[in-house]
Length: 177
Image 1 (cartoon, one colour):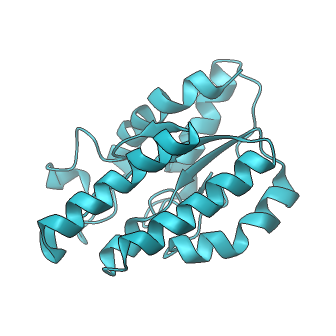
Image 2 (tube, rainbow, N blue to C red):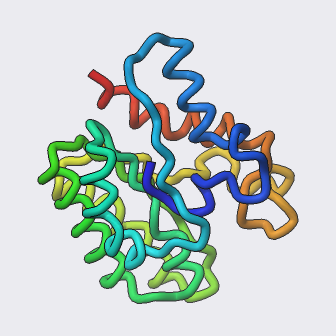
């Protein structure tokens, strides 16, 4: 797992986050994978790109779940820059033999509808171009329900973590051989 605060269990106990729940689910279903959570709160795609090679060498993943981009969007960083960073990470992971699941995010319309559309489209474009699996939107089915979010209205609550896991599981399960 390579992501930001949304995968690093920000504001809740790490063992209650969706990534930890994924590890429990794999054990329960006797699917022989271990989960390494290399997520860092506040991470942007440029930060992820800078540490990707080391993470791949250290962990040698069979599957890489790539959940980055939300902080780029919150900061209004250029979508082309985000897309280039994600592209580099996908290529590095695939070059290391990992199957990739790209987890998409959407941004609020603060930066205008054009930015929001371009941001959202970047994930599908990359998934298609590099034939990765895709979760179009991590918050699918819960984004409009403010009770699913901590007071900052950005980070999901502990109660929302199983929903995040289900959204990721749909794209991940076919990659688990």
